[in-house]
Image 1 (cartoon, rainbow, N blue to C red):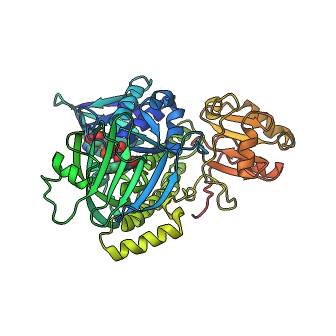
Image 2 (cartoon, helix red, strand yellow):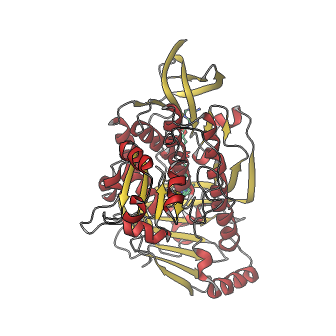
Length: 507
Ligand SMILES: Cc1cc2nc3c(=O)[nH]c(=O)nc-3n(C[C@H](O)[C@H](O)[C@H](O)COP(=O)(O)OP(=O)(O)OC[C@H]3O[C@@H](n4cnc5c(N)ncnc54)[C@H](O)[C@@H]3O)c2cc1C
C-alpha cells in the first residue's frame, strides 16, 4: 500500500455535489482529491430542476454561459386533479431575485458533463474515477482515507478534511456511525426520460397530475426531451410498467409508444431523511449523504450544492488562519435546519400529491384552491451560525443579485469574498481606522451607494449598511455607522483581535 500526503480535502463521491465541491475548493485555492468509484458519470438522470440560487453558484464558477446552452427556464407550472380540472397554474418564467430564472429545467447527464470538464480545468484539484474509498479514519491533524483504484492498487490519502458526498447510502456516513431521522413514508415511483417527437405533450413545462388513480408528474426538458414520473400502485407489474405500452397507458396517452423513445426508466424510492449529525471530527456530510427529500420541490440537489457552498469558504478561512476550527461547526448549525425545512415541506406536499384516497384528494383540491401559495414555500433563513440573525431579521437570509443596466450580473464584478455595502454617508462616517483597514483588505469588497447594484442591495435589506458573506448569505445589516463598524469587526480575519464568536438566530 502506498501513502500520499497531499491534499487539504478529500471529496468522496463525484455526483453533482462532490463535483461542485471540487470546483469550489479549487476556486478557493485549496487542494483536493475527488474519489469516485464509478468510471463514468451516473447515466440515469435524476434531478431535472435547479433554482436561481443554484444557478448563481454555477455562475460564480464561471460556467453559466455553458450551462445556459443545456438548460431551459421553466415558464409555467400547473396542478390538475383526477377530473383533469386545473387547480392552479403558476407562471414561473420570470427573472428572479438571484439574477436568474427561479426555475430552470435540464437533463442531469448534460449538466454533469459540464461540471466534470470544469474540474479538469481547475488547478489544485483532481478527480480519480474508478477509485473507491474503503476506509476513513481520523489521524493526527486530519484524516486518512484508504482508496482502491481500478488497477487494484490500494493507497492511503492524508488530508485535513473529508467531504462525504457519497450519496444516499453514504458508506462514509455509515462508517462514522451517523444515523438519520426519517420523515414521512417511503414511496416507489417510476421515472421515465426520453424524446417525444411529433406529439404535443402537455402545454405547461411542469404539471403535477394529482390523479388519485395514479399520481404522476410531467416535466419538459431542453430539446425534445421530456420526463414523466408515475407513482407505483399496489397491483403494478414492475416489469410491465416500464414497457412502451405500460408507459403509454400510465401517461394516459401523452407518451404514445410510436412517438416517445425512452432513454431510461428507473424505479426510485422517494424518501425523507436528515442525518442527525453532519460533522464527525474532520468528516463533513454533504448532499444526499446528509439529507434526502421526495423530489416534489426539485430541491434535493439544490440543497446539496448549498451545503458545499456553505462549507468551503469556511474551510478557506480556517486554512488561512482567519478563523478557528470551531467556525466549521456552523456548517451543521446553519445548514441542517434549512435542509430539514425543505425535506419537511416535500414530505408534507407528498401527502397531498401521492394520495390515492378520493376524499383526501377532494380536501387537498379545496385547500389548493383556497391557498395556492402552499405550493411555493419560501426558503427559510439559515440556522444559527456566523451571522447576526439573533438580533437582525435579514441576517442569515440570502442576498439578492442585481442585474446591472449593462446586463452584467453584480457577482461577476465582485469576486468571492465578503462584501460591505453602505450609503456614502454611512461609509464616510465610519472611523478612519476601520475605513483604512477595509480599503487594505483584499478579501473584502466595499460597495458604496453610487456604485452599480449597491442601492438595490440596500433597498432590498431596508438598511443603510450591509455585510454579505462569500456564500452570498447576509452576515448582518446596519442602521447606523456604529452598527456597521461593529458588524465589519465581526468578519473573521478582519478584526485586529481575531476571535470567532457564534452568533445567530433560531428559524
Ligand atoms: C427521480 C428524482 C428526481 C429528482 N429531481 C430533482 C430535481 O429536480 N432537483 C433537485 O435539486 N434534486 C432532485 N432530485 C435529487 C437529486 O437528484 C439528488 O439530491 C442529487 O443527485 C444528489 O447528488 P449527490 O452528489 O449528493 O449524490 P449522488 O449523485 O448519489 O452521488 C454520490 C456519488 O458517490 C459515489 N460513491 C458512493 N460511495 C463511494 C465510495 N465508497 N467511493 C467512491 N465513490 C463513492 C457514487 O458512485 C456516486 O457517484 C431528484 C432525485 C430523484 C431520484
